[in-house]
Length: 144
Image 1: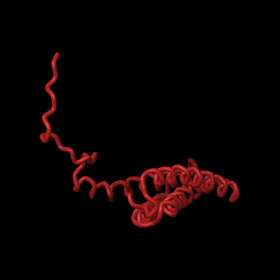
Image 2 (image 1 turned 120 degrees about the horizontal axis):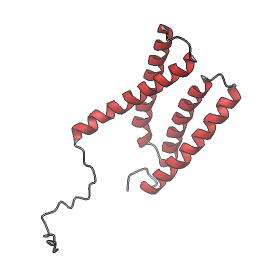
Image 3 (image 1 turned 135 degrees about the vertical axis):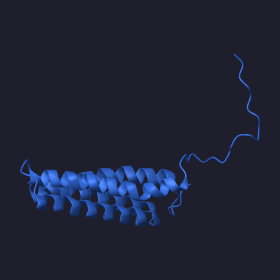
Image 4 (image 1 turned 90 degrees about the vertical axis):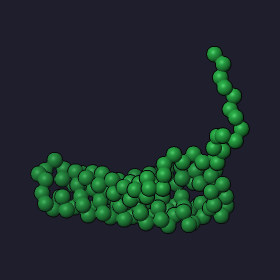
């Protein structure tokens, strides 16, 4: 079966792969940290509860963790893009390491084990983030 050849000038050639509008990005800018914070807070509260009864203090602990996580996420997301690619990767690695380390410390693990586990997570996040920023940004941190 024959296919029609594309006619030049009729297709959009802007090169943009963004399929969502500005309103969707604005909603996601706030919905993602809130949703991630709620999941993190629920997870922290569940670990802290350790199969015991759900109490008011446990619920409060979960909400405080959710607010702290969401605030840190928003802060890193706002500040990190203004940094050079190395510091950009370090910021996300520190955030991920701290977030994981706090959750891991809720399991009654020793402080040293929590620190070493969170360092392992932070190193992994740094490696992935640095690679991503190194291949997608110039030395000044501008997207290429």
